[in-house]
Image 1 (cartoon, rainbow, N blue to C red):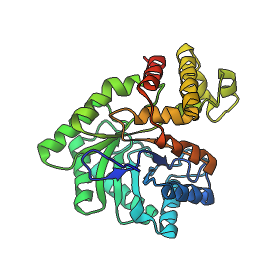
Image 2 (cartoon, helix red, strand yellow):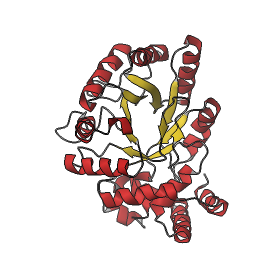
Image 3 (cartoon, rainbow, N blue to C red):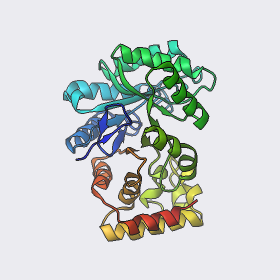
Image 4 (cartoon, rainbow, N blue to C red):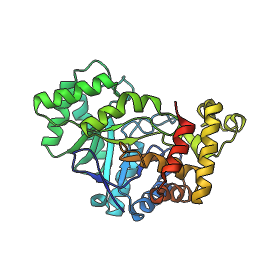
Length: 316
C-alpha cells in the first residue's frame, strides 16, 4: 500500500486514518482492540485521538480514548507500526488553552495515558484566540527538542492564525505546523477549499480531514430527512443536508458506486483521496464490518468522469 508524506514531517501514513473518538464511547475496550488490530493488520498505520475524547459522555472526564489506545499499544506490541496523533487545546473543564505551561503538562498526561515515550503528531485541537502563537509554538519546539513529539499539526484554527503561526515558525526558526485537520467532505466543501486549501498547497501542509462522511449522510444510510431524524444521535445534524443539493450528491454517489460495485461511503472517501491536497481522511468505525467497508475505499480509483459527476453535484 502506498503511504503518503505528511507535509515535511518525515511521517508517512497510509491513505486512511482511524479516528479514535469512538474508543471508550460507542466502542468499548475489547471492541476497540479488535478494530485497532484489524486496521493495522490491513496495512494501515495512522491513528488519531485527543485528550478530550470522550468528555461528552456522562461520567467521563477526557482521556478515555488515549487510555484505551495506550492499553492496546502495550498489549499488542505494535507501537513501532503506527503513527499516533493526538491533540491539545480543547476545553477540559476550564476553557480552551494553548499556553506553554498548559501544553507541556497536557503532553505529559497524554504520554502517560498512551503508554509511549513519544507522540508522532501533536495537534492544536482548538485555538484559544488569545495566547500568542509564538508561545504555543515554543511549547511544541521544546517537546520536539526533548524527543517527546515528532511533528506538530493544527485543527480548528482560523486562516489568519494558521498563517500567523507558519510565519512565526519561519521567523523564529522553530518547528512549524506540518498538517491541518479540517472539516471537509463531499458536502462540506466551501470553507476548506476557499480558505484553507490554498494555504495547505502553498506551504506543503498535509491534510487529514474529519467528518469525512458528513455524520453518516454520505453513507447513503439515510435517504430522507425523516429517516435521519429517527436517529437521535446523528439525525439532528444529518437532516440539515437533505436539500436539493444534498439529494443530488446522494444520487451522484449512487451512480458512481454502481459503476464500481462499491458503497456510497467508499466513493465519498475515494473522492477525497483523489484530491491533490488530501493526505488521508479520518474515519471512525464501531464494528469490524463497518471498518472493512471503509478501508476498501483506499483501493478505488475514480475516473475523470466519476470525479466530474461528483464535483458537479456537490458544487457550492
